[in-house]
Image 1: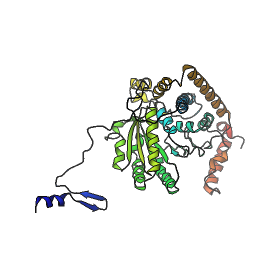
Image 2: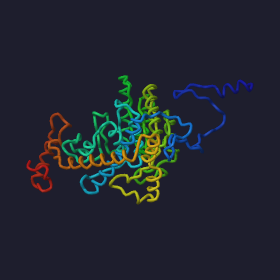
Image 3: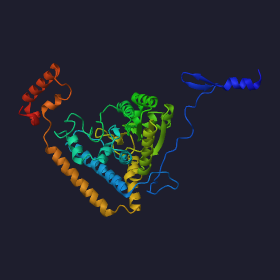
Image 4: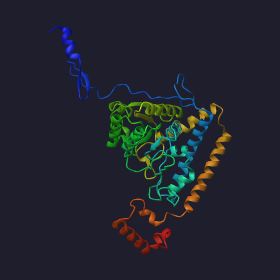
Amino acid sequence: MNTKLKYILLFQALDFPGGKVTYIPEMRFLSESSGKRIPCYRVLNENGEIITGSDYEQLSEEVSVKIYSNMVSLQMMDTVFYEAQRQGRISFYLTSAGEEAINIASAAALSADDIILPQYREPGILLWRGFTIQEFANQCFGNKDDYGKGRQMPIHYGSKKHNFVTISSPIATQLPQAVGIAYSLKMDKKDACVVTYTGDGGTSEGDFHAALNFSAVTEAPVVFICRNNGWAISTHISEQFRSDGIVVRGRAYGIRSIRVDGNDVLAVYSAIHAAREMAISEQRPVLVEALSYRVGHHSTSDDSTKYRPVDEIVYWKMERNPVNRFRKWVERNGWWSEEKESELRNSVKKQLLQAIQVAEQTEKPPLEDLFSDVYDIRPPNLREQEKQLRETIYRHPQDYPSHVPL
């Protein structure tokens, strides 16, 4: 056999059920990881200056000011509600400190028709879409004006009006659900996509991998946004995975992916804007890894100083703050001033304090709401549970003042 024919037989492409492949005579294992990390897309440096040669979407003064105002509002909302929890006025809270840019910039890059399936650190999307501070307060206090009728934990927001699917505690369950919804949009030929969020900890769940594979196979218009903030509660990323972060996982499932500086508003906005266009026009999933840092504790049930140094937290809070960085940029453009800053903060603080006062004084949902919305006709077991609960309240009225008299 001549050398040319032997070469043809060795390297010709042959069909298998999994696709065409070529043969080689050498034994080659794929490397477990590349020596060079995937680069991170960035537009603004730490001083709020555009990096020379940056490829990004231009923002108008109106949109830029709204983004910054929403970031400040989110920051203040977190501070006030966190303090309310510490005062015992609400049972639980969780902040977005350090990740305001991912929240607000991604929301700004989307259409109101795009459906959001959040994890639990995305209240900024609702804020951007018009969810009021009073509505946030009603949910956290679980009063009769809470859309969840007081049956959810605080911060488990949801709004059909704003295409924001209600938050739930189990990690990553929303990811496969997002793919299913995205596939329905595709079947209906809608000019919209689904955007779903998770943290780096969520990528350790099986649902993350199932969702990526599901979306790639069905070619669903869904954008996965992973907030890689370094910590899954107290578990550092070095103890979660050996790969180069999250972005490399997209390629394994056949999904276009990008790594972006999650503390850079212009980079996040531009990346999500482009990802959305790809998802809809090309009918494909896209994975976005946003690198950031969770400045606050995981939640009010956590003390992050027990597992990470305080000076590390302070460094990210002061030196790498996404709100401060974007403020420098809007100020450099002449769109912001100290006077506007003072007016905004005074206005938001006033709204927050008033909203909390109203929410706290608003009565709780009626007891029957606890058993409604599941069955058209309540089955015997639910009727029995309601009876037992009412009897308990009757025996201990001092513990259930909002439900007495029955």
